[in-house]
Length: 319
Length: 185
Image 1 (tube, each protein chain N blue to C red):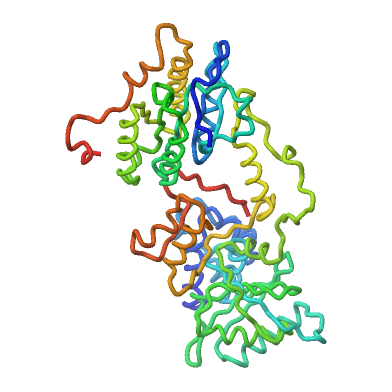
Image 2: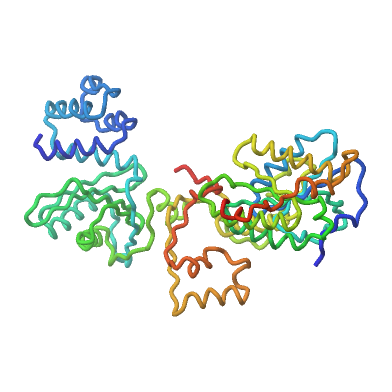
């Protein structure tokens, strides 16, 4: 094991939380049972790391094995960093059935013809997802294993999820991806977030949706029973309507976890337009602080979080 | 446009009606549950509303309302604005011991102090009580429910020798004589 492999291993161990270390190392399968038992996971992490390094020396493991460990951790915990989604378009008519082996070979060949110093590792995950780890170098330097790019692609879909990609490597990745997946080109779908499964579910419509019905269900059917006969809600009907509208727009079930959204309002004079919205009755009065605080605070960049006082964060789905 | 009137209907025997007005509806529900659980002697009917005026369709069925409680969350500007709008829908009779303000979040340091100041001014100008409550804890909700219930019994005429007029004269919020009380807030 050379120094760079040791450094990479140290860094990976540092990034894995202590409580997940044992289970991740077990999945790695590079240590014998006896060696695994000799590791004491109640020790401080740096000590475990030193013991692990000596075991790796013993087994004569290389950088390849170390990056394998990193991939295992990333696949199990895909919420490290922000994922960006791209969509492959113009599928080739006579596209061969793309299987993993073809894709793997073709992607490696294409990428290595574009850039000489690059290290690619491809792994298939249970749910038909292909995980690609790319460590980039350039013409004179070795691949940098400290800042790898992760790419996730589901073979039968046009979507590609990418995290940790530098702008200068983007064209290279795209050039390698497009022919190996048998498509004509690729475009950005303007979707990003920390939770990979949520992005996937959102794009592939895997969450519970509501289809517009001609005859809406009876309102009583979904209204919660009053907790006590002596409590009466004066605006029960309005509340029902609102609930129904919310369900029609967003569906009944749990929604995918998305952390941010960017709306860009562009017009020649935004403030005049907002004022018109309010004066013509398009926006409900009293004016929401979201619209009125632009002139009041002299700012046009706002971050809305659910950590404010008195606001309970809505329970999100546990994915 | 129909104003809410305190004396246009006859009261019912051993019954007290309370109306909780809150723009958001989380605290309202907790408070309503606690109020009906706390009181066993009197038939307390709690009505929940987001804002006034109340819908006219059920105006006939609705019993006379003995106490109107406006819940104001200082953390939200909208809550204060909505209360100001709703207040205009009350007939003047309610301001004689049949309404009060319930304020939450006054302890929170990040809330702009002007909101509390303007609410205090409003309460003082209407001669009405202003109760500070804690909506996050169970004890806070219990205390608030107990205090509101005591006032309700008086304003519904269920406490002998006491009338709602006492409420407005005895526990109303008044502006302190100190000229710079606004700065202290």
